[in-house]
Length: 259
Length: 120
Ligand SMILES: Nc1ncnc2c1ncn2[C@@H]1O[C@H](COP(=O)(O)OP(=O)(O)OP(=O)(O)O)[C@@H](O)[C@H]1O
Ligand SMILES: [Mg+2]
Image 1: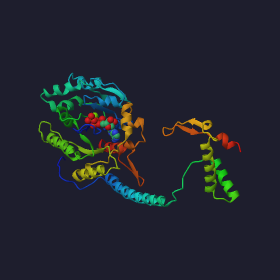
Image 2 (image 1 turned 90 degrees about the vertical axis):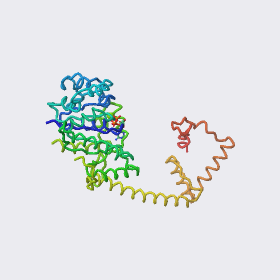
Image 3 (image 1 turned 120 degrees about the vertical axis):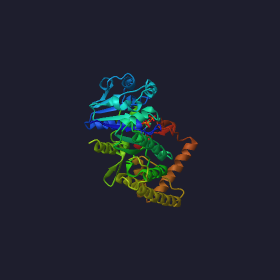
Image 4 (image 1 turned 60 degrees about the vertical axis):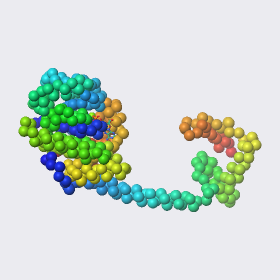
């Protein structure tokens, strides 16, 4: 069975694409068959993997081409559905459909992938809801600023609406909050992490350290595993012989989820 | 699962990171105390004390001479400096033969005195 993971936050620049690409490639390196679907007309998924933006999403959702025809090979075991500015028309088109909230779920049905990761745009449009309806697990990356708790609450609200709607008949298997751009040297970040934990408890997963390598890797079209597997954003924090946080920790946890 | 009630449970790894942060803050506080102590010590040092980098060979020769003459090394250096500066000011000693363009953004020139070091 395919596990569909949605990386979502309506706020921009919180590390959604970095998380989708790093997790996707990490899972494929661990031997899973992975597809990343870029629902964002910015087309950053292809960019981050060193590929060209294409109208893959448009062909999949508007022209109803089959998934296996639209998917492009990015790395061994890793395919993507890329997007580009034609993605803007996708949202408009989907709005006109009768079962618009099911459009992504249907398009991905019967796939042979172990895991599909949906990278979503920083907005709350119809595709945002359609992505939720298609997903088993939600990862909510969030920066640790004063708006973090509010931002997370907003997504949880749309998740609750999705579950309550009888049309969708959907229950999430789970969700987790992923603090990103974590900077242990500033008091602000630590305070915000504490607030987040106070509000959401153990669904707050260990943070991804702030790491200049993340931006560099994306600029070179390399994933963090390729560009700098020893960097803090991958390895997280080490103390007392233990390791916590970073994308390696996320990878371990997600692998438990998709057993 | 999307109830928004307050949850008191915390992921152990997240707790580790938060606790570790606290340890670090405490650590850096004592770091600060240590630095303040060092500054105080530095302030008590004699105002004429300097810390310079010398070619090792030159340094050795100064200390050997100080040892042999039973004179403090500081005073040997002070004598040679005073003598050298006087010669520089009178034009007996010129920098130009030793000048080399510097690769550092902080300086325009460096001095290459290897020709002096070797000729004893
Ligand atoms: N841990 C990190 N440390 C430092 N920079 C990071 C980190 N994660 C991501 N970045 C950089 O921050 C920028 C924004 O990240 P990213 O594109 O993943 O966010 P996003 O949420 O997908 O943004 P958008 O909402 O525009 O889609 C990118 O340049 C990325 O390379
Ligand atoms: Mg993005």
